[in-house]
Length: 261
Image (cartoon, rainbow, N blue to C red; front, side, top):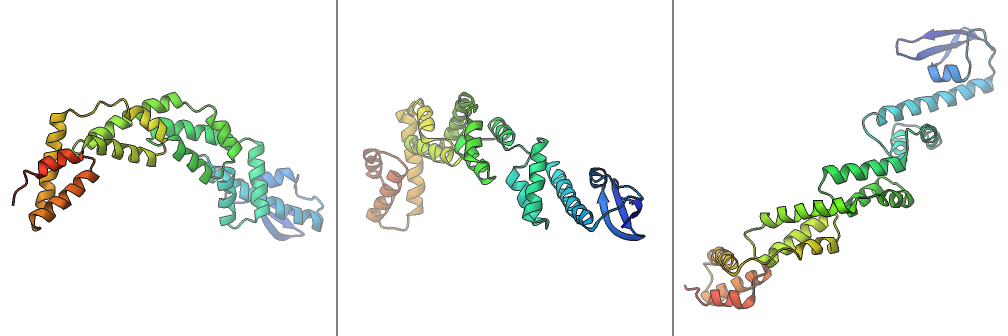
């Protein structure tokens, strides 16, 4: 068999391959160069089969490059994307390996960049960041390697700002409840309990007058909520709710003694 023509397609860097005057397939410029194809070259069935495989791999590689153009991806994400596009697992794996070979796919570099970006632009702590990397199927070894250079001192500064931000946000709550709410919120953001406690322990307790004003305000709201209940039942409901809110039993009891029908 002889290659009788190679025509340029309208699509950039694409060509139509003709063998014995018949159209066989479309090929990329990479495939054309890699297999040294030219008009008049003899070609066997085995070589044509290799062309099909090579062209599929080239298409997979181009699809991966297009996907990578939007943002960095992990090896797992690229392989998963290619398989969803219809490429076989073998072709997807080979495409990933080729991109790794030219450093366009690098899970360690991705982990390092992701850590730096999240630490500088988000309010997420290291535990959430680590979980995100795990979800992207970065290996435990590479995650550990990336965290070896993690700036925990910067994290402490970020955490201090977040603690004060949320502590002010819950200013209508008792001092104890404010601390609890701040801690729970920051735990969900991926900061460790020990790191949070270290900063919370530096916050001075609310002065007695302010705490009493907050208690009175909260108790008034509860009393109105349960206003349809008998006085004894209303006091019981208010006491339970105020204790849950972190107010001292004796302080609540004293305020309840002044509660009237």
